[in-house]
Length: 153
Image (cartoon, rainbow, N blue to C red; front, side, top):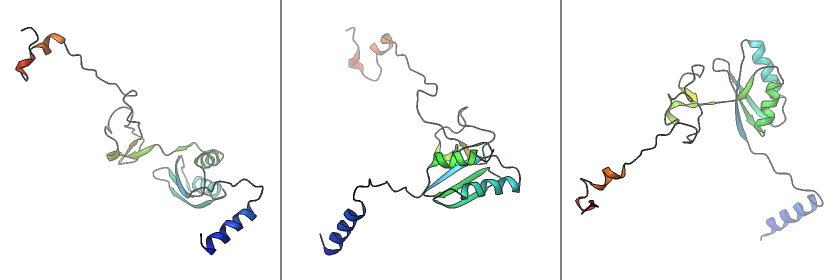
């Protein structure tokens, strides 16, 4: 440990004596879907979200009903603040359609989605219908692929 490292270690010991160290929030972007119809709605949402501590920027796309909040914030606090304006708000539910394996299944396709986007759906096979293949044991006894597989002889 060099002189700089030693001094930093000692200063941390002195500054944090008896206090628990708070975890520093990471810079992140929270995207929300908020219903906005006019300039007044847009201004109301922008002012409310800008007043949160840790917010660096608020970008609004009224055509897509999308709000992007960048800063040292927690997504649930941003969502709560957006709902406090009286607008219907939710975490941005859409992803580009090329990121989804089957973008036109009933769960993913949404008529209200912006162009080029579909609803974010888990690729969990239990949530979608799965087809199970039933193999008849009598048809596998005589295999054309493997002539030695005949179990009767």
